[in-house]
Image (cartoon, rainbow, N blue to C red):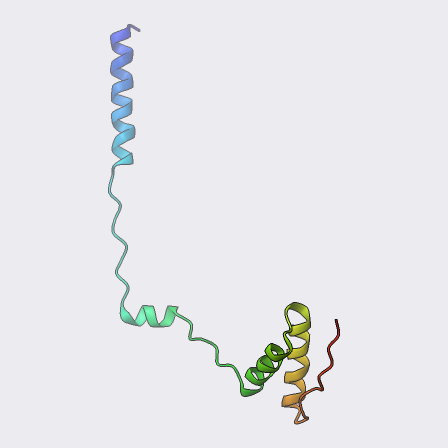
Length: 91
C-alpha cells in the first residue's frame, strides 16, 4: 500500500468513528405527574414513643450503639405500657 492509500483509509475510518460519537440519541420520555408521585417515597411517620425516646436520648447525649440500644429498650417499654426506662448511663 502506498502512503496516500493508507492516509485515505485512516481518514475514512476516522469519519465513521466520529460519526457514531456525534450521533444524537433519542430524548428520554417526559415523566408524567402520576409517575413522579409514585416514585417518591413519603417520609416515614415516627410514632410518639419513638420521638419521646429520641428526645430522652438527646438529653442524655447518647450516640452510636448506646443510643440505638437505649431507643430500642425505651420503645419496647413504652409500647408495652410500662414507664420509660430509668436513667442508667453505661459508658
